[in-house]
Amino acid sequence: HAKHLGGNGFQFYSAQLPTRSTDRLHLENDLRKALTDDQLQVHYQPKLHLASNSINSAEALVRWQHPTRGMLLPGEFIAIAEETGLILPLGEKVLRRACIQASQWLHTGSLAVRVAVNLSVQQLRQPHFAALVADILTDTGLPSHLLELELTESMLLEHSDSVADNLAALRQLGVELAVDDFGTGYSSLAYLKRFPIRCLKIDRAFICELDEQPGDTAIVRAIIAMAHSMHMSVVAEGVEQESQLAFLRSQGCDEVQGYLISKPLPTDAFTRLLQQQQSQADTPSQPSETLS
Ligand code: C2E
Ligand code: MG
Ligand code: MG
Ligand code: MG
Image 1 (cartoon, helix red, strand yellow):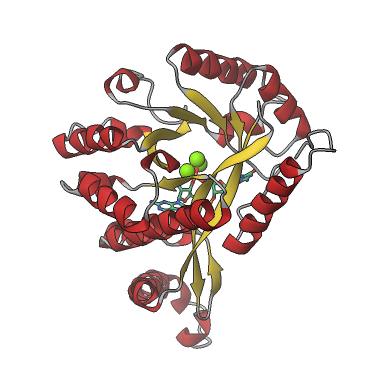
Image 2 (cartoon, rainbow, N blue to C red):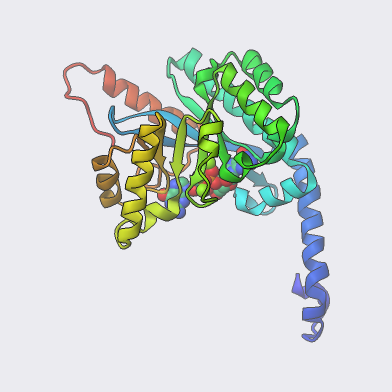
């Protein structure tokens, strides 16, 4: 964009801010168009269940196939979506898409995969959010226990009736609730008693330094012990090394997610992964194959 400013280098700094906000405006308009033109995609990152060594669930992660900028990651547009309110139609689209997909895996492929969808707090603040989820489940024919919603600690600390009511109603529906990026937010754990949380996802920050930081080993161990004593399961995110996997396995972590298992995959590739796993399980002569 600097070239639009002419050759005068002195204009550069004064022009930077307006240029940036113009960029944001472009991106906002582009995002509006993306929603109507169906440019958003959902990729799926498997979670490996350690006890059964199988993939029973996946996290849905939004991607934007931008017409000129190429594939954009959530870090490049979720903040703008939240500032502009576009997160509501975006979030609903991702949720619906993920439920359609999981229903298709179940009903046409006989593959029972729980799909986990990330929520923004604005979605949970809508008084009728739980009713919307119920409608989506009915429309798509997905059993509620195959939908999981990933929340962050800050969302659970909101003193808002609509958030609390939605969470109770979602749990009543049979939808699973998970706390994402666990350990990075707040020191108060009281919300774990207040809300019907099924699962904690240990943040990548604790996993990536497991080899070097003895403190992180202790934290991960403590989170797993606490979760199990409260009848919650634990997912470790951002697992990239065999040594991390071995440690998590030794500590009884329930599921792992990360590049070591698989990057987030487009639908077709994830479907093939599931089919491959199923055909291995269906072969009786073979000893059960390991995926990792
Ligand atoms: P998250 O929910 O914590 O998702 C995990 C992120 O870590 C994903 O990034 C994933 O690609 C990345 N990741 C997974 N395994 C590894 C690993 O082994 N190493 C490293 N370095 N990274 C790994 P992604 O897809 O860019 O998403 C970033 C964040 O954007 C997500 O963090 C989530 O908070 C948000 N997000 C994604 N999709 C949605 C959505 O549909 N709605 C909302 N509200 N937020 C979303
Ligand atoms: Mg997540
Ligand atoms: Mg996470
Ligand atoms: Mg994260």
